[in-house]
Length: 301
Image 1 (cartoon, rainbow, N blue to C red):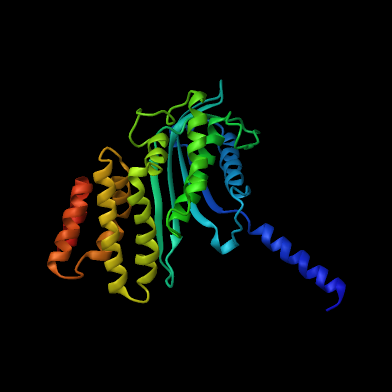
Image 2 (tube, rainbow, N blue to C red; image 1 turned 90 degrees about the vertical axis):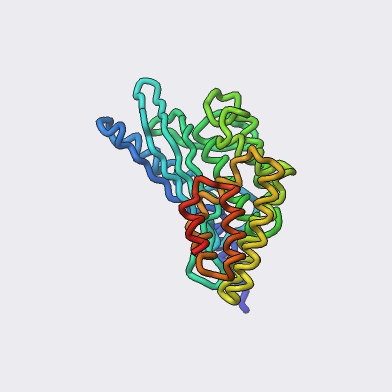
């Protein structure tokens, strides 16, 4: 091969690696119906700037090809906005998913409604981030969820594979407490950012993290080849969820998992296996999350 051709191929290869380096493919949306009388420019700028912030930054040292990027949504609802001090109060509905091997199905890996998504932003602000400098609540929250999403996705691919990335999310949480915004403090809320990351990395919750891997890799990812084997692995993984709940019964994470997995779990177990197996799954899920009993009842049918 001629030298100039080799150089060209090398350049193309390097470009492809860099182009696929980013981990997230995030879609950001802004619901501003509560403040509809305000000019739209600042909200459009917020949506565009947050999207670039999440998608154009390489959050880890890993190389993600374009089709491997993690699909996620950031649905921001603005309740109040003040032009005087550029302050926003609202909530964030966040969700991430991954493909299931051998199928066209995608499964939710994380979903939560953060009710304390409060921050300051001006129309021409540029969002920047350094891990060692947490001085802006909007960038702190977006970076926190970026690391959380990536870490949980890695946990679904290898046993507790996201530890290093998740610790970055925990560092943000610890450093952001001094910003004076809600969502970062211990004991304020069992479902706030502090509770989610600290519970997830708590040693007592290791069964939940192991469950993440078993549920997806040895369960869902196997169902295209052997449905019974995959469903059996998922049933076994739920025993780890039960163990995590028993280890730390005040944690909201087992309930949160069953909240966004309820439809999937019903689809997997309803009408499958014998009646005792379905009854056992029903009992386990009911004890973890009785608020979803209308769904769990369908498993017994």
